[in-house]
Length: 119
Picture (spheres, rainbow, N blue to C red):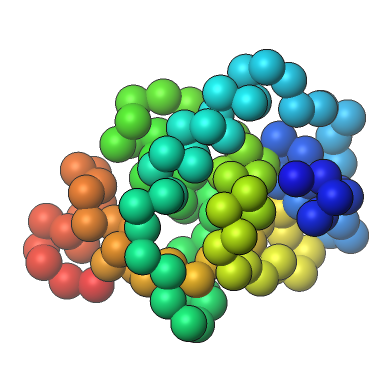
């Protein structure tokens, strides 16, 4: 995972304009990455990058559905591992990925648009 994005930390992708940390991936992070891989694996990717939802928002979807904590960087590491197309958001620790909004939120019990049937 680090070979793909050398500035990846559990916080996310570090760079100009982002929070800098010395935090490293530990055993707990490896479990979080595994949870994210399990959650992302059945999702259908799409040809275009979805710029409506960030990795930070996706991590919260996973947390609600799996009822466990997931760091932004662990989600990003899972995206890299699975080869899901992504785009780094300049000046942000987050990424956008090629999975549609409906696909991401379809099982999310806490998403307001799901309650109203709109996206």
